[in-house]
Length: 181
Image (cartoon, rainbow, N blue to C red; front, side):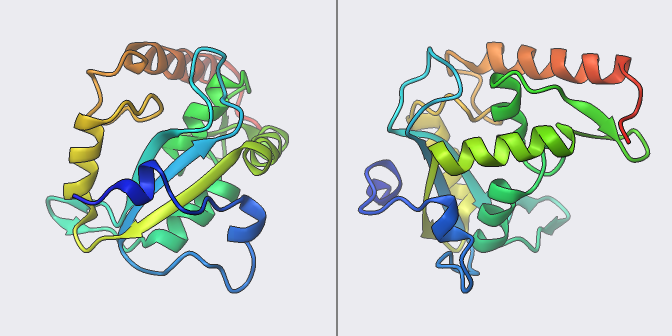
């Protein structure tokens, strides 16, 4: 397993660089890693790998149609309903989660998502490596590395229970509030 390109990459890419057209992120399957110049919580270490993700995601009945480019771009400019990374970061930053649309989806609303996108542009840097079966590497990385922002497959991490509870509290507060327009 050659993971140096994620743990200690030669290059970390900013939101500005990734969002350029054409994007430098390949439209290929792989694993991506997020490093943060400033972390979303004072207890988390800065300037190191804190989260890994994959594209596509393997599921029992199908494989998603995502690729590295789609996922990385979505994390930088999407919303919390489609990005567990954005959901976790927003909760750690104290942004208010709200039900939107029909009330099933939850995001930080336009203003909150814009705040989160700006925070990520200022602090989040990403790297990636192409990998044909990224779900296999993801499991190995999560089991072997200290990745405090990953929840799936990461119960052994010291932050897991705190993050899970923080996200559950944010979801419950969102359910108690009216649907945001």
